[in-house]
Length: 340
Image (cartoon, rainbow, N blue to C red; front, side, top):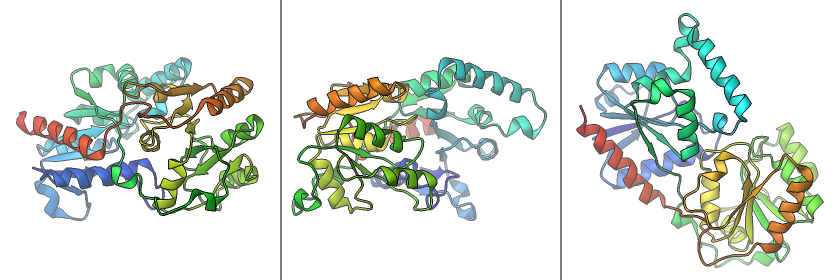
């Protein structure tokens, strides 16, 4: 069985969870004996592949693969729609219907046109599946639809015993927020709330020095309630997370979010946006929600979360390793290979 992982996102321009997802899966699936490679547009030797694992819906490539008898598997990231309000969703569905009526490439290049060529569509959590089925009932009605969540790498946990957290001069108790410094993650908003709630938060995440949003965030750093150590090694990241009391992310939208799984591996409670992306974690035990749109309520929720936050004996929800999830993907590949 030969599998190609296909995507159109350039990691050197937009590093993040999608890159981590692809690299971890390729590594762990290969260990299970599957010949799995990243697609190389110039390499004709890859024409003998059995399955293309799409990380983004691409109608043209999916159509060509389907015509050549290649099985198509899609990891469908749908957070950009799932976390909209019901009114916004209705508007999007109406826009899509209008696009469907347009002639030629104006319609045929729409991302959902790839769905009819997919043999299996995978989602990270049930709310993406529910909303995608609402948007595209005809396209997804007869498709094999499954849920395989994100995961974490145990080899990147508890690797900092030789480091001393006191060297960073952080407060004795603090929260962490590990995510790209970006508008979607609402880093600036959380930094402002941290100051107003007087809750110390250590932010860790990639950034672009020339990005106006990062420059806005930089102004919020006071090393009293808003800390940003900049780039840190995996060992220092582990040290900071190991000594934290809780994790906060007020993102506008995610499809699982790998950083949340990594934080959960440290047995700390989570404070997440009160949105569908945060509701779909498996067997939640210590997940709390923040209504970030309501300033006063959000500040109160952040204060209360901080006061109660502490490391526990178990994870805040059921988490899996990339090795675990690789087995689930291989199982689905095998089902595709056995089907006509």
